[in-house]
Length: 263
Image (cartoon, rainbow, N blue to C red):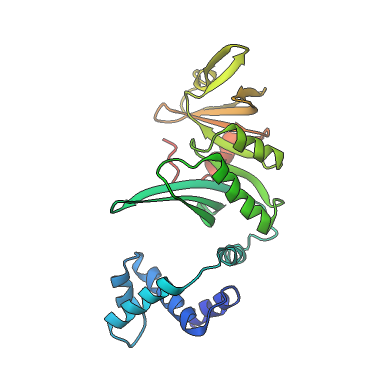
């Protein structure tokens, strides 16, 4: 079976499209794999067709003008292709922001960690610059749970952007473990009326060494388990979790996507 035929069979079971639109999408995907870029002019040249390049380009334009994606169907397709059903996995939150001319493209993505990469399952285009808010993160997780349940989730991993009382409390209420990196100057409440930065708890660590504290600490309104590691750069990797992971730093370093900058 040709690769294009196999793709068509797989996609037909998930996307409610006619043959012409499905053929266009398959051709575009194969061109995308070959070129590894999104430029429509170049995709049209790599698009397998007997038509002239100008006609191919116009066909791709019409596809994006007219095609309607069912993103729940796309999520089910991803879950099936990577065989995530009936398995346990870590979820990861990431956000990317870049500009297209004067327009900001700011996307919050929920992915599943798989062999050193994050496979996007759901995403949310933020109509703004800057960080996501707690409500947006909760909405993204709720959408995932509504379709696939929470039974397979080993935990949620996130960078320093993904902190917040409401967000952390919601995860705990849903019985979803999390490991979230914090800024070194994040304040903890040592005792009533006294605060100090979390880095003070790990200041004595040597490079490459880690420590998981034996008691919970209060960050904002949340009582969390803290762990930390001294990086080669001298910076501290400090994690907060709502459950006591046996090896929290190791879990974060192994399962968090390698593109995540630990230095």
